[in-house]
Image (tube, rainbow, N blue to C red; front, side, top):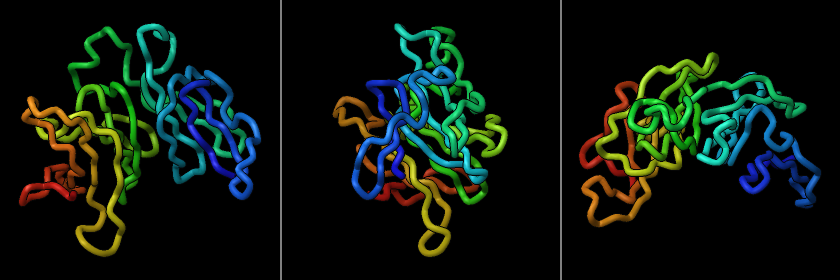
Length: 193
């Protein structure tokens, strides 16, 4: 089956992977505080993580990552609580506007925090905050991928930096590569594309 985050209905939908037929909601609308889901990823234990974005008109919803049972879609827990908007969250190292997610070879979860230009590293089991990337080079990161375990620079983290704003010196509109251990931008140049 195929799972799709549906921002319009605040749910995760399930489709037949062969026919494309809609099978119904896998995660019910607003379950566990879900709002404007963007990205999905399965944990090693089989549970599903879904990003959730809080907005000014949905202050009761979760700003973070919610964990659901990977078989039933039932709410398990708030895996990462990004904090309440309006409490200084946007200017600090908290999760704000969660987007892309990827697990690194170390088992840690990397999440693009788009609104405050961060990539944040969390423990892949507990959801505890571990670290964040230097944000001086990122501008609205959205997508994250991890290089394969074999080949060129295995395990390094690739991050999209997407805004096209000629007046912004941080505007890269590129895919940037970061070292898996130090979280530093790879040189020379650091751009993958």
